Image (tube, rainbow over all chains, first blue to last red; front, side, top):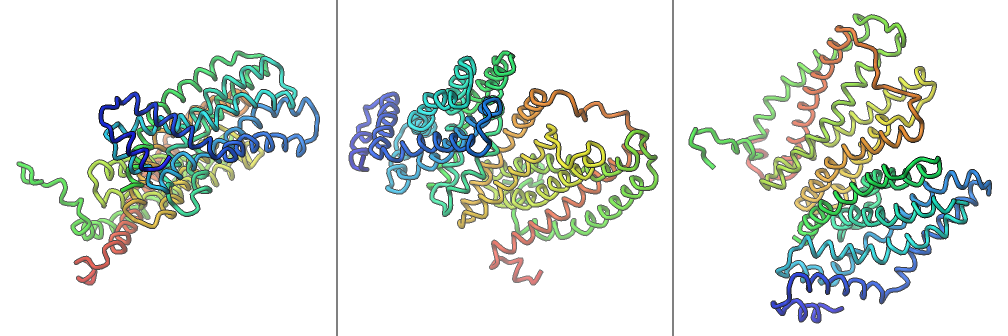
Length: 238
Length: 246
């Protein structure tokens, strides 16, 4: 969507905050869907990368099912990370981001909408495809269920935390590798609790503890990450 | 910003007034750091008795433990300065944060290396995925992220602010990471290796360790102030200080 149409939409001041936020969400999803190959690339990266592990380690089904939670989680984490730069980059390049930031709506909520849109197209698909890949790794149905639930919460947390890295590295040369260095250490708790929940099921324990902690990390990220991202965006646009 | 009491807290927040003051503090800190570290090492290597369980190998803790303390303390301090920079928009705070980072990373590396040197004879392995070792490694990653971000941004002003935000985010994450790694550790390997039930420490060992810690602290102050002075000169090379020929 061009800057002009956006200006037309946001220029009318009678729009309520809610409807502005809703429009940003819909717009971001629409814009991303116009470049379907980008969206699909993340999706296929996840499938291909996860399929490489059995080729590297041999097809012993016991070994595979023991590895599966960590392999699927690390792969999901990497594919979420690969798409991070897209949250703000194209809007930054054509000036749309500046226009949006100039609007009279709270930046934090705008940022939250933008990364929700990112999550819908990069994190959410993984939740649906991961159980299929899990079947290849010989996971039981109980494990697959917890895998999907942990990814549902975890990928949202990854998008939230990752958006900080994306905002900090906006418009910097070589930002792709830099995002990885900034964001991966921060991803560790999500990985530990997410893969931990699935691991707990496979050794016959309750996954509730790990899932609750994952939920706690998600709740914290939901509050703090948009604040930090909005601050980082203001610094980048100064 | 004149306060009623007549003392201006922000006086030394200006690089120009801070530069000479820092210059006067540095030699005192450097000399006392050297004295204390030598004395601490003397206690650690010669005075402290041999441990009945670990033999002579335990003596590495006189370097390892203070280094680990400072790796974490300096990260926190860096985040505090970064936060002060963002709140007061004070250049000197950013410079302090920038100057603290290399020393903090150095202590992290020292803690990791000495930890693995200690681990080889004690645990029989150079590296064990113990909660403390792992979170120390992650702390090193956080420092590396801070450096990389700062190095990647050419505009000094933006580099300061962006890395300050990163330092704050990292500081919030440090305890979360520590506990996640700790719980991960208990899930994965049971209580095979436990550092928490350390045997009661002899008073002389504690004394040696505290003296080393104070020595490291003074060393950090000296090195950080030297680095801040360089940073001030680098940034305002047309400033009055430079013309004075300092």
